Image (tube, rainbow, N blue to C red; front, side):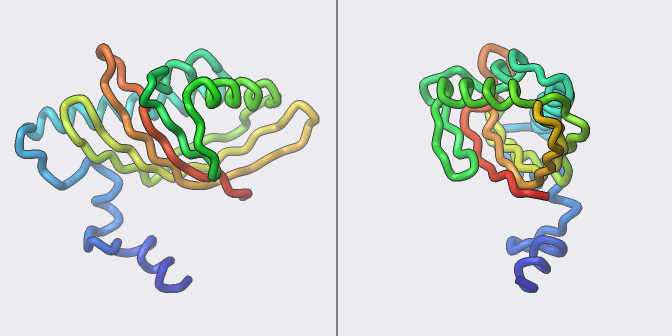
Length: 166
């Protein structure tokens, strides 16, 4: 565990320091200019920032729009694979059981630009909510989102992550 923690807290296995991991990828895409990469990183960041606001509002419709209602959609959440319909139904059930989202944040996010219309964003998160029974639940974990620009809107086409009790 000590070696794993050192890898996470210090330089990663690829030799990049932790600070460079929090910004757009340093791996240049030969067909993209720096300005084009920066635009993709900013668009993905805006979408991810919107997620935090939607979580605080418990905004089911915003979440449904965040995820791509597409045949290729797949999410691996807490060890379960789900298509869009199954995920959307699960999300509706989950949000219906929440009285209030009292804290939510993403941190240590990193966006890797794949092309003008695709990027991967990986981040850590932590949140606390009060459910309808009045119980407080706190979670943390890491999540990856594969974004695709669909009709001018950045949507998640693939995603994977795990919630762990805080």
